[in-house]
Length: 480
Image (cartoon, rainbow, N blue to C red; front, side, top):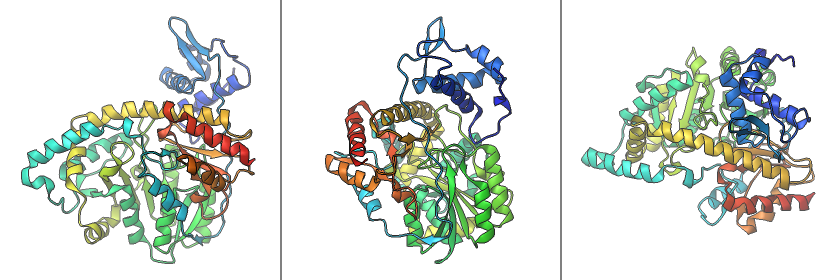
């Protein structure tokens, strides 16, 4: 078998390409259920890649239940293969900038988050059962006591110094060197993105972003009176840079917003090469990049991807992130690095919210310092990988024929393309009375490009909620 896998430089990491190659061979019948596949060493030699790359690829295929390891024997194709469908097609969004309409459905979905009786497939929030809530609670109580009267005061200025130092150390894994003084603590990543848009844009300005795009960003643009220019994105390698360049050359753009790692809703990450190219392209047009990296720590294989900020030579990249997806959504501990816009961000933060709550900062800072966060991330990545794979398999089994679903290698959202006859807004209405929430695809664009798409929260997929996904699939079949 001749291969050029080692020479590829696509949007996927190399181990994902190896996993995809072997999975394709299984689907095409080269290796049949129950048959042995090449050993790790043999596959490494065939594809001219490292043994560690093949180990990681085989681990992914085990999580996806394509192959299984047998003690003292090797790897075999699973007797019963998962019915994971193909990935969704790339859609072409609107070519012109347009205003965002009101999002009543967004408000309904976010309101449903507060109902503990509902199955939360609609909101991209982690399952509380996989978060270290009790441990963080104990740490917070101890840190507040240790700080005495200062523990419940204001963390004025840029935020708790200990937390900013720990974030700077943690982000070395993302290939970026930050000084603690560069970091501004925010109330979640959403506040960071909001501050950035308020500094960079004025009502009537145009923002460019990849499509589909997280619906809360669209609502933010609406509230700020901004127009949105959508550029197509692939579930395999992310935003199309050639389309982005055409948009920049034909429009006056004030900012570009991009989720570069484990994008919501596609789950895709830009390759390091593409991140570098994106930064260079925007720099040529003097357009600031607002980079949301909120999911960057949830890598299934434990390898934290890099960020665009690492390639920023002119201070035009504003990096925003938080611990809401990995530790505690309710703590609202986020942070941002603003480059040349730092002082303006700090002033706006001061006048808009004064400071971020101190007790959660104390807890997160200590959790980072004592090594608890790194340990937690290893388990979180494995759990999310298992749930994403299992949910994708069940979508293939229960949704209408022709349904497609993404195969992310981080985060916990799935983007589902159903037959065109299935209106996801009608699907939402059909399952909502059952106590199930889903996120209709129409929410993720300013046009009608994604009417038959759906975003699902795989973090909420457990043995106890399988019935709910089957109900969604059954309802979708009835709409065909």
